[in-house]
Length: 277
Image (cartoon, rainbow, N blue to C red; front, side, top):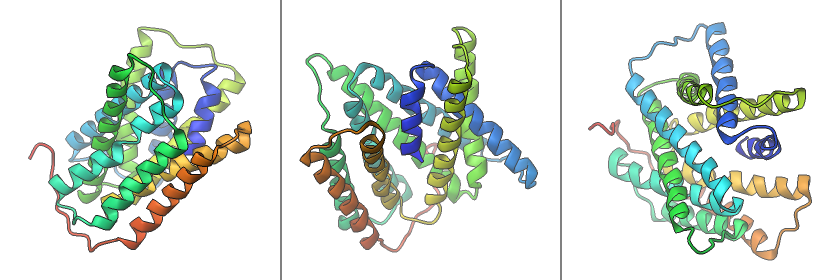
């Protein structure tokens, strides 16, 4: 779903700014989750609103920094820097959640990240190191956001409620920003793309929230690299991109990392810890 969203974002970039893309993606998500929760009688009130706010703000920060890097850096470089988030997530999980450490899982995480580098082949021009730090910052914020998703699942919050509050925070923040700037004109084509981005992003967020429920957090990080693999295949299919040998090696390493992570599943032993603690 994240890869499908990426394809639609690439097409919609001709019609909307990055902030607008985040706004429409979030607006569709908050409306969809609200309607589903109301239809099934799920409560909208939560006792853990602080954790939801931290999850929303950290996730929004990661997305905005990532989109800024896409504007300033080659796409492959921006994606590679953003995909440092599983490394930050693994660190937070072992320090704060006391996830059981596994050398096999740690190795799978590194193998998957090397696969991303081989597939995307990132480059940096002279004088772009500060942009690289911003890209790593997007990965850090994304890692913190995923940490809060895991925390919320440990606290018993439903996947729908977690996604609802995340999209609500993003919608309000970007909506306020656009109110004082400008909205682009909307056509049938651009509106269709915006709806597609919102639907795929919402499904992806629901999937990642469910993945955090009851599984080792390192495995979630490793398997998340599959989004880069699917994006590479879609680039080949939709834009007839000619992938070099290094890209196919990278895909193989991403798949290998996923297989290693499944074989290395340890007995899960974690406790609920908040960043405030």
